[in-house]
Amino acid sequence: MSKRKIIFDTDPGIDDAVALLTLLNYDDFEVLGITSVAGNKGISHTTDNASKLIRYAQKDIKVYRGAYSSYERVKEGLEAQGRDGGNVHGIDGLGGVGLPVDPNNISPISAIDFILDSVKTYPGEIEIISVGPMTNLALAIDRDEKTMRNVKKVWSMGGGVFRGNVTPVAEFNYWFDTLAVEKVYSLGISVDIVMVGLDATHQCIFDANDLTFIRLAGGEKGSLIYAMVQDYLQAYWSYNKYIGIVIHDLLPVLMAIDPTVCTRLVHSNLRIVHQGLTKGQCIVDLADSWKLEKNVYVAMDMDVRKCKELFMEVCFGKEVKETYCLVFPAL
Ligand code: BDR
Ligand code: CA
View: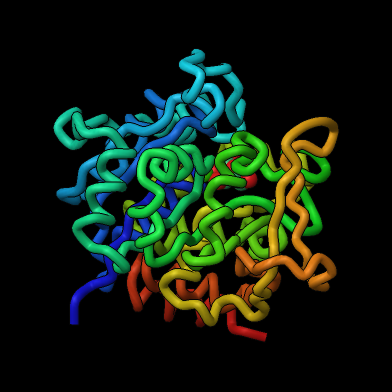
């Protein structure tokens, strides 16, 4: 059977990095390419970070450089705005772990060209896992909407129904580029879009014990991830008083691998606020009051234990997962 064809659209980002290292280890995925986008850091950093991770994982996959700023700014030819995820992801976006870049795995082809070419080559087969601002996808839709209607599925980390993180009501990726979100969801009637937002991701907190387990049992990769997440851990303590982290971008990857990690998926209509105090807020019509066409599947509840076991198995192997189950027996 042929493997599922995946494009990973990302702004690494510590949680992006953990998601990518997991994705690259899943045998049934053929990762066609990684497209970078500005978000957690500027485009040079996020592109380099993707290159570092591919090099580390020793994969023959290319990074395609994407949008340097939000949809509106790119369209108007304005410079990047300099807003990013601050120090949540450390000085370089990868917790300062010092992995080397491989200039040879950065393609001269742009992310938009790569996405469109891939969908033309494999119409109806490409799944895009989008874990940064949706700018690249929106620009690809602008360029060739007909082709983008042939994307098989979008797995999106972003948004939230009942909570925000960058403001009380807005999640970072969607807040960063609300116009792109609107554009992408305008395809949601014909292309399945699964939103794995903050309602889902905040259920799955990797606590201090999980992180220590990863360091002790996860070999070299576990030690790398442990080192990488230290700034992130500090940020979660400062902002949320969690002794642990939410690895947001990992959740759509796990769900793409095994959709049953999500225990409540709601088909609904999503709209987003573009301006003012509530900029970036998603309005998801769970009760179907508007009677509008449904353009989103929203992950509302996750089986946290299943998520963690799946992560341990895919990222580190079956034995590590079995050890995890021995050390932390399911209640
Ligand atoms: C999202 O924002 C970024 O900081 C993370 O990488 C994740 O994609 C969470 O709101
Ligand atoms: Ca991200």
